[in-house]
Length: 227
Image 1 (cartoon, helix red, strand yellow):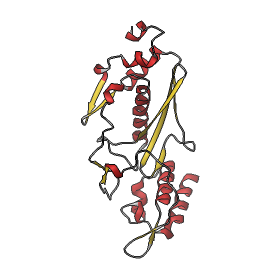
Image 2 (cartoon, helix red, strand yellow; image 1 turned 180 degrees about the vertical axis):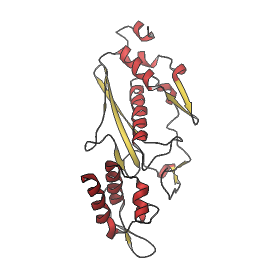
Image 3 (spheres, one colour; image 1 turned 180 degrees about the horizontal axis):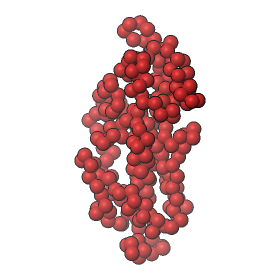
């Protein structure tokens, strides 16, 4: 029987969940600590059989595409209190994936669920120090791989705003970041690899696509979705 079954109903739920030792269920991968999601769910349900969780949707999709990367959000309700956690889709070295697969998104949702449960106390202590500033923030799946000082990186995901197309050294206009996000999102929706889009237009990054080609890219992807 779980240690939680011995907790008095009068104890603050957060205090009861935070008191549980989860060390035996923590996994180490690439130097990072992860709490087993089946264990977290089992402990949560033993503590509160009425506990629920929800994967938030963005225009019907379980992920949000932004300038900073792709994000998922999970909300967990424990004894009437709902707390949500936003989590970026990361690779094995905890770098943001700009073109994640369905597996990457599912993995991120599971990690996000565990962190949302941690907001209620369970295993919260294993994340101590996780949000300390990093030396650099490097985006995976991005051919430009420019290192950005941590203090310049966005503190939280933001929706892409409309921006004017940027000009490159050759004088031609390139698609804006908002347009890049539109292409990225649509490619994810129709299941087309971002690499295929880049190869088709003979560029190494979305930012290199000519502004005059934007509608052609979108029409091509829309045709794929219609098919």
